[in-house]
Image (cartoon, rainbow, N blue to C red; front, side):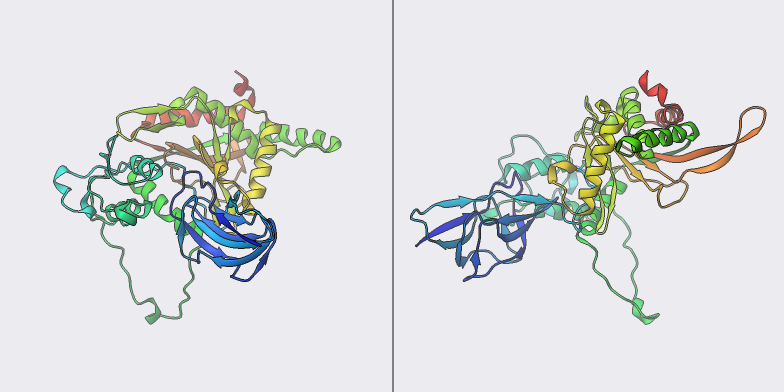
Length: 427
C-alpha cells in the first residue's frame, strides 16, 4: 500500500478558483473517474475526477477554499507499488447558474483625475502601464490591463501581498458605487415588509456574475440604439421550402435565426467598425479580421452567450448544426469555457417570446449587438396598394465612441436589405 497525491490540474490561467462542492470525505473509497471536488472559475464549473482507485486518507480542501494549479487536493491510499504525484484532467461544464453575457475581456472605464490617487478606492483606472513590478500573477496583470486598472497603488490581499482578481474587482466596484471617478446617487431602499408580505430569493450564480458586468457595460458605454424593420416574407417562404425538402432526406431544420446570422456576418464585412473593439487607451480601434458571432441563449439559470466561430465562412446548414449543438449544451450546462470566448458581435433574439423593439446592452469588449423581436404580418404600401407582408422588427445598439449615428443607421438599413433579399449576401 502507498499514498499518492492528487493535485489541481492546469486551470489555464485561472487563479484563486473557488471550491464550490466536495464530493468525498476521508475514509471514502473512490474509483477512477469518480468526482472529487467541483471548482468554479469566473466562467465555468469544473468537476475534478480521480485518476486512480483507492481510499481517501486525507482531504486537503474544503468547500469555500480557493485553489490554484498544482495545489494538493487529497492523499489516496492505493495498492500500487509506486508513489506518484497525480494531476488530473478537468472536465469543464458551464453551470446553469453561473454564466453571463459577459465576454472574455472587460472594457476600460472612464479615468479618474490625477488628484484622486490618495487611496485605493480612488485609484485612477485607465492608466495601467506595461512592465509593472507589482506582485501579481500574469492572469491578474492581464485582467487589470483589460480593465485599465493601475496595479502599483493597489494593496494586495493575497499571500505575501499578492494582488488577486478580488482586489481588482473591489476597486472597480468602488468606482461604480461612486467612490472613484464619478458618483451615482444611491438606490433608495425601504422596509418592504412593512407594506405587506414579501419573499426573498437568492439570485442564480449566472445573474450574480453577470450583474456587475451588465452594470459596467451600461454605465461605461455610451449606448445608442437604432430601430429598423425587415421584410422577411420571401425569406420565410424560402426557409419553409428548404425545410420541406430537407425533411424528405432527414436533413437538419433551418430556423429564421440562421439566415439572420448569415446576413449579420455579411453586414460586418461591409461595416467593419461594428466588428471591432475600442483599445484600452481609448484612442485606438481594433478591427478583427475574423467573425465570431455570439448567440444569447436562455437557460434555467439565466442567459449565456456561446460563440459560433468563423460564422462568415459557414453555410446555413453548418450554422444550423453549430447553433443546435451549442444551444442544447448551453441549456444542459455542458458548454466549455472556450466556447464562450472570442465573440466579435452578439445577437439576442426575443422573437419566440414576443415584443416589438428593445434596447440590448452592448456585450463589451464588443461594440455592437443585434436584438431581434417577434415578426408579424403588417400592411405595407407598395406604391399602389397595401399588401400583407411579414415584418421583422430589430434593434442595433452600439458604442457611440466608436460608431456615430449615421453609420448606425446605414448598418441597420443595409442589414434590413440583406434580410429582405438574401441574394445580396452573395454579392
